[in-house]
Length: 299
Image (cartoon, rainbow, N blue to C red; front, top):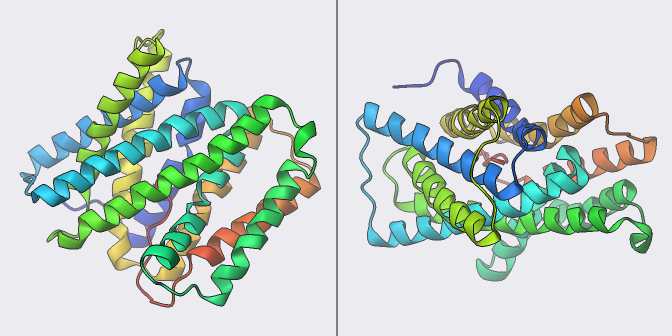
């Protein structure tokens, strides 16, 4: 069953839905690992039901199954790092740092795939560091410990996020279908199992304390995970690289907006300038010479 709406609308609606992800994490009164478990579990079950209702079968080779298991591990690490980063430094900055994955992806391509970086991509790296320095400040030692931990966790999120995207790209090389609903469902359920096990090891409960928390987690799993990712995935084959690049920026930009509107994040002129510079660097770093659409952020 095709998703409704034209491709460009689905692309930007999907990016907007995903931008709400850190808002759910910030609002819900459960541990960082528990919220990650419910996002992946609820989203994975919803996607699995979609596959059953539309009679889509999981027909993967053993190699692809192994790659999807690795992708599930990376996605679990992504959520584990990111949710803690959100708690320490807020939805806006944590999401911006997660999207530094474009530089990890470029470095991987250069080192392992022998892909020569374009000049604009090379220039984007120091530009991103300048933007980050304006937001965080230059005196690292004077920052509170939790804030420094949040920045480090945000950068670790970018590494794990890049691992997830690389795994998905490799798994999709043999795919006969255009929309990766099957792959996302498998990765989601694998991630949920790993995060559930992590919660047990950490001594965290998976119990949801209130009905309100339960509704927030359902919104997280259905709206931001299932619908957000499917809207983006279904639109990518039909949109231009420029449109996909703009959608890539929409997620961290809106996450900053939600941070200011919902959580009263103070935003100085210097921090605003840094955010604009960093977002510009992300856009430049994600650009490719091909006109094929690139995958926007799927946090």
